[in-house]
Image 1 (cartoon, rainbow, N blue to C red):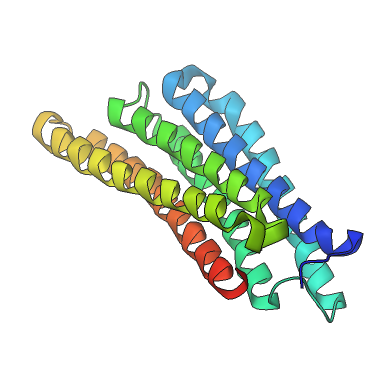
Image 2 (cartoon, rainbow, N blue to C red):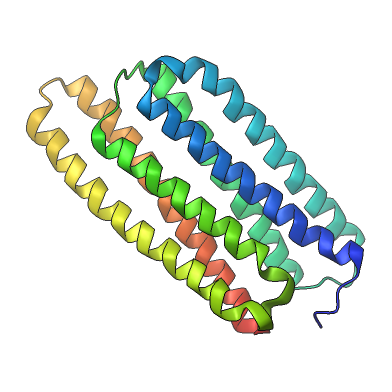
Length: 208
């Protein structure tokens, strides 16, 4: 089952490329949280990453449409590819809000959340890099998914604490609405990382 030819391996290489786009997008987001003055400049970078992720997803879907036999289930390839692409879209949407809202200096919790997203997307890269031989790589692959779940749980704690601080200290309702929306989007991105981890666990369950 896992004696793949070169063309079969393209799916896995594209997965890793897409995961790298997700990780790079998380780093761009973190850079903006650390230095808001770079937000407009970084918007172009994240748009470029979104286009790159879209192009990779298109290649995967096009190949699926032309291939009868695939190395793992077609549905798994489809959902994993779209999951990675959607992650970059989430980051793009969050950065759009930051620019539109003219948020200024970030809340400490937002900086913490972007750090967690960087770590989670790095584990996503690690996990997808191991898909070429699922039986051999079962343990480290599952370990990567468990780390993602742990990071998502940490993110939930940061999100709840920061929203509590926001409602306690922020007297301007407009600023409160802005930052609550941004924090929710960052937390949604971590949730999405865990959804990808869950999909990967499902693949491991089928093929390990």
